[in-house]
Structures are given as structure tokens and as C-alpha cells.
Image: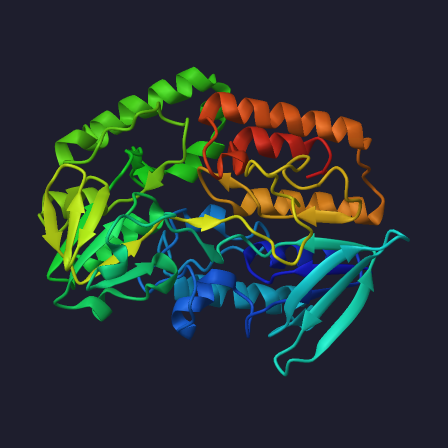
Length: 432
């Protein structure tokens, strides 16, 4: 085997397909019992970022693989079980399932003196294996190491309720009749709050910082369709921002009218939250917005505005640390938290190592992942070449500088990409 692919979710399967099409020998190591990544976790009842109410936030037409569309019978935004079934079908249709080793955890990936890579893994029986490869492609995602406030607010140790992370959340039915505080305003926070509001006695949404909440569709078009539309990409960045701000004002008004903090930053200068539900649940009184948590006092959660509520549980939807424990420290995440990758794929100083899917677009990620996978396959096959390490470092530095100018030094900002411009980078080097 020339190549080791780590992970058999949406990104790993795209890489496997691209390698197989070129006749490149590979093995795909997957920690879970089957392919599908986070989409298979809710049905399997496994701990992870997936939960029972999880649906696609992006339209099926652009979230499916280009040469294997999602079934016409699927709704526009399929639920997790449908996406998991689709990914299994893709693995079978492409024949890449035969290359997947399930229940195999990668323990370490190291580059040897001769330039080859040693991958140490452990199977379900606990047996370790050490194999050497020419190349390694990491497509394992970054939603495994939960991030909680450090330290937690005063009194957390004596709080009589339970404190959870979204990684531990499965379904609102587990909280029937209970009083729950959800912390955060990202995708998982608004999904979980909306889900809880149909089961819990009381659902409170604690928000420290305002984010732009965007419906999944504007003017009848899904956001990912807009992101790839020629008319959208022909506009300047300032024109796109102005168009979107006006559209949001028409679609949902001001967030302050819902009791949420107005964002302290312009649209597209931070990640946005896609949701058709949360504002409606707030307007119906099913979810009550509150500011950040100041402290815990017995069974009560006290907020920074001095108000408090009795709570049986607090669910922190505060994201994940971007960690790759099987890789050397600092690869690809630098000490300041920024991801240092040429074209968001290649570490400049580690020849033969690639990352696929480590990007965060506003819109469907699949087109981006497929473009990355095809480019990596061409690099491995020798049809494409990388520039010198110094040139790659210059590109990385320029990109991160532009990210700081646009987003500031926020966690995860260094993996933000704009769909149209990012795809254009690969069209130059990957024939359509």
C-alpha cells in the first residue's frame, strides 16, 4: 500500500475514491465500526458530535458527491440517518469499502529518516500494527476533543445539576420535564436548544457573544447554491456583504428584537450560524435567551445581568479543540491555534503528509473536499507538483494574515474559506 488514509467519513471516502480512480494502492483506517463519520453516530448510539435531531444544513444537491447524487427521494436537508445511508452506498458504489479497515484506531504517525511514514494502529482486539507508507492523508475531522471554559464559572463544583458538553447530548427526550441551560450560539447550540424546547420543562439559551444567525435559504435559494452562483462571485466582497445584510434584515429583522445580543462584528468577519428554527422557538416562548453565565449557586445558574434560573442540567455547546493526538506537536496547529497548511492541505515542512476536509466554508463542504482529494491524488501520482517549501510558507503566511484582518484571532478562523475563490484555486491545477 502506497498511501494511508485516516478516517472514513465524507472526506476520507472522497480521498479513497480519488485514489482508487487513479489506481493508487491505499488502506483507509477508521476507528468506528463502519464508514460515515459523525452521521452514523446518532443511529449507532455512540458518543460524538452527532445527535438525534441532526440534519444537513446544506442542500443535498451540493452536499452529495458530484458523480453520485443523493437520492431524489431525500428532502432538501436530509437527516443524519439518510446521510449515513448515502455514505455507505457511496462506499459500496465506488468499491472503496474493501479498502477500509474498521475498528482500527491510529495511535501515531511519524516520518522516518528515509522519508517514509510509519503508522502505528490498534484494532478492536487491542492488537497493534506498525506499517510504512509513502504518503499519509489525514481526513479524520476535528470534533473529538471537547472545549469547555477553563475555568468553569464559580460554583460549578457544587452545582446540584449536571454539566455536559454537546458531545454527550443525544436527544431532547432524555431531558423531558427538566430545566436546561444551553450555552453557545453556534450550530450545535441552536439545534440542541430547539430540540430541547420540545421536551424540557424550560429551555434557556445562554449567549456570551452575538453571532449572525442566517436562515438556510434566502429568496428561495439555499445558501450553498448562492455561494457557488456566478452572480454572487462576480460581486466584490463589500457588495456581497451589503447584499446579505439587507437580505437578513428583510428575512428576520434585528437579533436584538429576539432578546439576543447583536453581533459586535460585521457579517462574514466571523463564522455564521445557520438555523431556520431557533428564532421561531424564541418567538414562541419555547426558548428564553439569557446572557453569559456568571456563576453557579446550588441548583441555580446566575447570569451576568444578575438574573438566575433553577436548572437541572447545563449543556455547553462551546466547540472542540483542534487536536490530532497521533501527529507530532504543532502539526498542523501552531502554538497560537492557527492551522498552517499550504492551500489548506499541505504542511510545508512535512513532505508526504496531507489534510483533507480541514476547512470551514459558508455552504456545502463536499465540492471543496472533492477538489482537495483530486489534487492530492494528482500530487501522489506525480501529475502535479508542489512549490518549494519557502514558497508554501509564504502562501500560508499571506493567507493567515488575510484571515486575521478579516476575522481577527478567533479560534477556528484559520480554516475559514470562501467557496468560490477556494474552488478557483484548484481549477487551475485539477482539470475538470
